[in-house]
Length: 166
Image: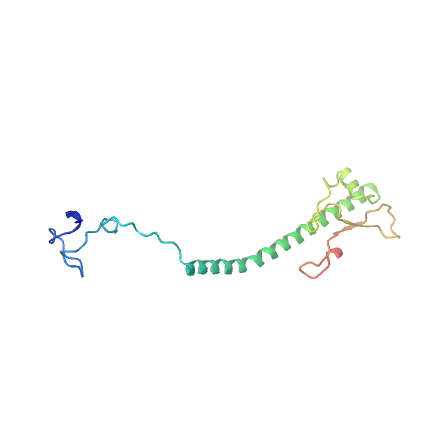
């Protein structure tokens, strides 16, 4: 079967020059998008294995740089939230003591007397019941059960101090 006449050129068309390395008699015409005129389908190409490995190595390298910084900042933000909660509770205990002339009997009493809206959550333990209540010293003139409050979290802060000592 002979190919159609428009696919093969016998001589040079007007104004065109011969492609490098191909004789005019058998030079194939090209379609505008660069594919052959014979209708052969262009082979679709994907990524090679080495390209995928290189991309995965770059992503792993970036993740290994970013992950420790993220977790350190997460731990520092929890420590900051704990300090803020302790300051708020201690201020409320001091205000209660100054107003009523005694220490509160529980942290819930601070909330019911509206010195705090609610008992804050310990950011390290994730619980409102883990606060450690410190009783007043025996020589204190004011009575009550809550002199100070500390975190119930185990472990050390980034500065090396125990959370229980804050």
